Length: 420
Image (cartoon, rainbow, N blue to C red):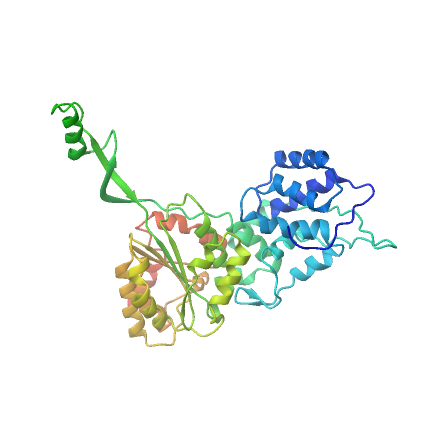
């Protein structure tokens, strides 16, 4: 339980309404809180009473929290909703970030901003009045979070760089629900199956020896599925900073989602140097994960040295993370001032070690895009698919692109223009 100010008990609290709205805030902050849990919480508080702050905290905690990663979010939402008399002022301070990379200049605890956004959700209610003795009035929020389908569809196609702060927060919530499944890779290793096409002679003979040498059943094998690795190389230079922040939210979802099929997800950022942020994205809480990633990568919004960073990856990390037929996502605009011949050699080596190399470039949002830059012209021949990466819709299409090996995106058209 967080060490916070004492909780003043109002004389006639409307506990049922407040617990219901508190549960709504938890659900918006990412906790799986349903109607059944709300009813259980109301009954539990009715049974335990509302006389001790610690008992009240742990009663609600027992009803709403069932995973370790949800404890921090619950504690922050509880503090803002039940504990802080000036909770709106505190939440509005959370909503005014000064971002450097994925870190904020104002130091905030993990999940604190998410709790503020869940309670405000775009609304600015009046501050609760303070009585003559400073007693805390009841806190009751009425937030309308409805959104029309047309505005959500518009948001899916809107460029990340053109989004307002409110639209960016909504876009991140949509990206948190996206999935990036992949099909398994058939391997030469087999597993037992009743309908397999291959005969498992070893298992068949062993079973026959147990029957005195008489073979009564033919054991069969089917190819054992093998899941590939996903390797992401994300450009965090000045021209890509707005896109890289959003894409890292998406990568955090992919890294922590279950049932997508990836053996492992490895994430690297590069600007003037290569940084491995894989272990940071494995943290369950997205705020803590991105804060740690921002502290690790010190070259946010700096220059771009794509060729040298790819050389570092091919030399130091390729053999470690490119096994199991890895799929590589390269997220960059391709604007590099280094020698294009060196960049082309490193791209060729990366392509040869990857099962599939997909390049996401936000510059493709322009209809008249052409590979005039030397860096783009050197990189383009060595990718399997060249697609845009500037909106929610472009990230949603990634699942289809990965499942279709023949999908080359815009590469065919641009290679024709390059050769012409």
